[in-house]
Image (tube, rainbow, N blue to C red; front, side, top):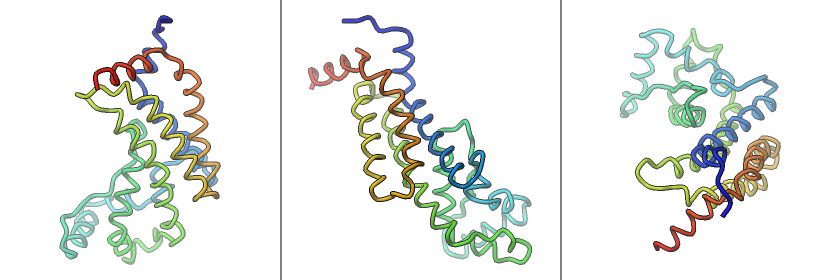
Length: 207
């Protein structure tokens, strides 16, 4: 069996990181689609999060709107570049709290921050696209269960999922292709690494 290089071991321990790189490629493509140099929280969820949290009175008002609807209040989340899936989690929370965000932005001093309906409509699409790498990262981030044997199958599954998504979201092909391209770049480097084949065979033998 060919020797496994230090580089191969580095790749094998960084599958979630590779997935994050694919996710970042998608976000950069979204930024290009929006005519932006980069994507941040203020582009995907305008300036709403910092505006609502700009003062204790506004934060309290946002919580009160949720309590009035009979739910425990939640805060909007911020995008953190160094935290995996933070953009997805930010969008999910933003959509979850949409009714209260809309109510909040109807108040006189916040009307200029109102979000147009077409801007709301695109967020679930970005959420759907970003859900693919998030699920993959979750599957390979187990701390107690070995996951190396799942790496190649799930890597391929991720490419397949994004490829199929282009059929239902043809207008977002360029964005999805950015992620696929990044995955394929690393796939060429790792699909022949012996460690993955050995791990898969070991699992089958133990089963």
